[in-house]
Amino acid sequence: EDTQEKEGILPERAEEAKLRAKYPSLGQKPGGSDFLMKTLQQGQKYFDSGDYSMAKAKMKNKQLPSTGPDKNLVTGDHIPTPQGLPQRKSSLITSKLVG
Amino acid sequence: MAGAGGGNDIQWCFSQVKGAVDDDVAEADIISTVEFNHSGELLATGDKGGRVVIFQQEQENKIQSHSRGEYNVYSTFQSHEPEFDYLKSLEIEEKINKIRWLPQKNAAQFLLSTNDKTIKLWKISERDKRPEGYNLKEEDGRYRDPTTVTTLRVPVFRPMDLMVEASPRRIFANAHTYHINSISINSDYETYLSADDLRINLWHLEITDRSFNIVDIKPANMEELTEVITAAEFHPNSCNTFVYSSSKGTIRLCDMRASALCDRHSKLFEEPEDPSNRSFFSEIISSISDVKFSHSGRYMMTRDYLSVKIWDLNMENRPVETYQVHEYLRSKLCSLYENDCIFDKFECCWNGSDSVVMTGSYNNFFRMFDRNTKRDITLEASRENNKPRTVLKPRKVCASGKRKKDEISVDSLDFNKKILHTAWHPKENIIAVATTNNLYIFQDKGN
Image 1 (cartoon, rainbow over the protein chains, first blue to last red):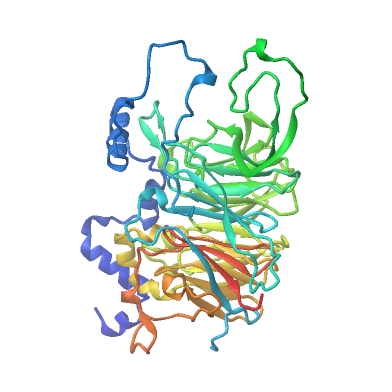
Image 2: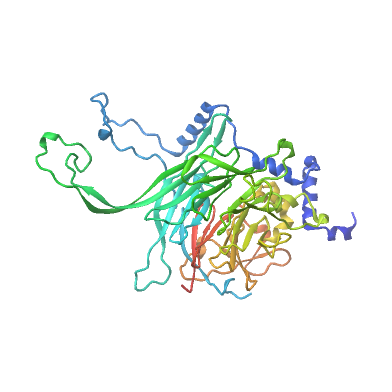
């Protein structure tokens, strides 16, 4: 290519040339359409809800230590009422922005 | 330019930083939205883990107060949880995309928070009294044996430690096939809009089982799809007017009085492009990532990848002002495309008087543009500058050639440190800047 022409090329065009050199199969469509498809992409697909639950369980195991059974818990002694139940501890991690 | 900050000689100082110090960022801690309420007393953040944290500005009652009150944690709650779309076998992320505050009507505060699919109205209320002296219940809630009750008393309210409770009052679900990118409360304070990639819906705050579709750009044949909706906002004063921006760099203003379905715009804002300047990247970098009306309602601001543009609503054919955020990135587009940074969605915001606009950039830099003086400044959100009342030093990026002392070269910029979300206090010179997982608060020294 003419050297003079190269100097006049927009920085964008020079970058485009670089990209096309790296990825010859880029195609003639402007960058927009790949971008659109990427935007509408709905996220990671799972095989079914079981697959999803397993994936989530694996992630949770990495983050929280597993708790053993509460040795003080008595079961089968009486019929529980809402008032008698212990307060459910939140298993969610608080944001680090707090405190 | 002189060391003083852009914008009426504002001198920005570090005030506070929230969040973990360590570099190992858990995904859930990535901040995804920041928003002051209408008075500026409350500052809300949303994160990728679906959590909302609200900070409250402490009231100044100190004799020797050297700055506006600090922001401390007021309330935090889990707004959204991850869900599974059984029909499509897809995960629905709990990430909070946007938070919008309702204007305060009574003692409680209300905000809307949304993830990709569901919008929730949260009520945040204070409780500083509780009833004591029940006849049939003990103080811990257990019921007393009725035979032991020999006298009657009237329960009374006694003061207790302040408790701030957040409860979901409305859940607006199942109205969006695509990912919600915007919510905007109407100036009538009764309705709001939610926008996804292809549709915009109008809701009434009281009604969760019905929503009106007001814009639908989905083509009959998806192969013909050429653009998507990227942001939408109601006009601050005209309850019939809203705008939405597109991935092609256009903004459409719609008037709901014209028709029930606003597929046909009332105004189309688009800057003509010189076709000889087109490149592979042109459309991508023209995509508008944020649109914000000025407080006055006369102007709107759009953010595309490299610039911020101010539009006069009376002039559709070009913006009245254009500010370059990081023009030096134009010669880096190839690598920015490869590492996906070219798709980063930066937001922008106005100051209370509409005289200064702010937006984020990379390397934890953020930029401010003074519309009157035409001066601009680049500042950095970093823990290294965290001495209160020390004026932040302006930063400069060296695009090419010889790098001066204190300048940073383009190749040294950290593209993982992006400031996508910033917010400006509605009345004062206090700004909230979110890095990946930290929230910085800066104030004007002259407070």
